[in-house]
Amino acid sequence: MLASVKKGKPDMRKQVVFAVIVRQKKAYRRPDGMRIKFEDNAAVVLKDDKGNPKGTIFKGPICKEAAARWPGVAKVASIIV
Image (tube, rainbow, N blue to C red; front, top):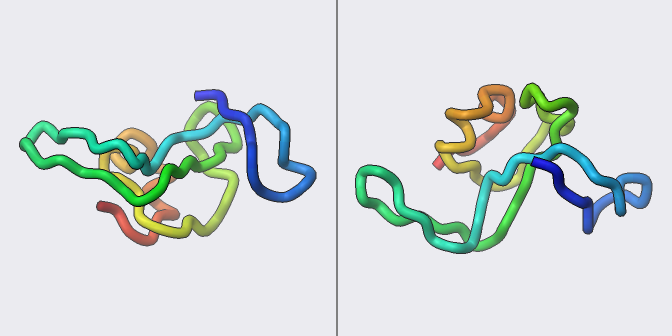
């Protein structure tokens, strides 16, 4: 997905980059019936469209749906919920 950088380093701001949404405030339902939501929205900037993350450390949890779809993001994640 393409995203615009709103916060961050001045050289990254106002650029259009590939990104993956890893957390969202709006609750969503998993196939097992559990509803899950996070306290903030977050995305991970990708190097390329293959799913390799640009960063090396992610602060906060990452949902398991994103980790299953993009294994490169899951490798760097500290917590998968």
